[in-house]
Image (cartoon, rainbow, N blue to C red; front, side, top):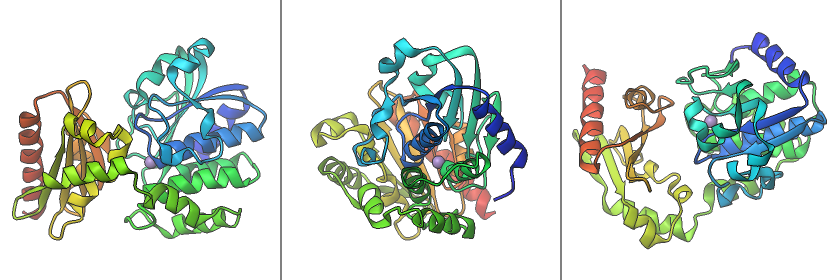
Length: 330
Ligand SMILES: [Mn+2]
């Protein structure tokens, strides 16, 4: 990872010069969003600062074992404490990603944006964006050092969770020597790797299993088997008695099929839009592709939401993926 002395110093100043903070991450939070939110909380706690944690979506059940998870509130629960004039946003590529939590932020708020998405639009008044970091948790490890804090075990466990989940369990191409060195350092603080991996990566809920069966039933392929896609409609969630966060990881089944470069999961949202999750092996930069539809993410994992009919969304996305594959191979 490239050194970020200037941004680190600015982040340290941002935190030291105030006493009360709102920490926020993105809607439908993943392990890095929750781990990073809690990581910042443990840092602020050690510094004796007042902090409030918010997420527009409920904390997925599998992350509720993390130390401090019960501190994360809904925007509604924090309404009476708002507006907040000092905000730390983690793992959010743009302000929109904070969802309803944005309504707690004062119009003239100072906002420190810490992230690792290449598509981050620098929406903060201060921005520490490291596109070559594997996880926001990895950037936050630098913040711990810059603030000269103690590496407490709860803090280490939260950052480890972000690092583990955003590297797909240390399997994706973002698993660099620096990532494994940081993982090693975190384990030395007493973090239990098997327990965390079992809770956040291995355990499958009944709802998740039911959704996976339904999604697999729709799996289709095009472009000589290089594109695989699946659908989850509203009735799938109802019949599977599953919540939104239980579709986490299902898109990988499409991408994992031999010969597939781009795996896609289309899902109908409650408000009638279609959310598109994209994963790629090597040929297509799905972060760029998602961005062209108003979404964002990384080269190998990205997403967007389109307010069109299911048929139209499928046709638009598949046609753009097909074009990208042709460009990639020409
Ligand atoms: Mn992340």
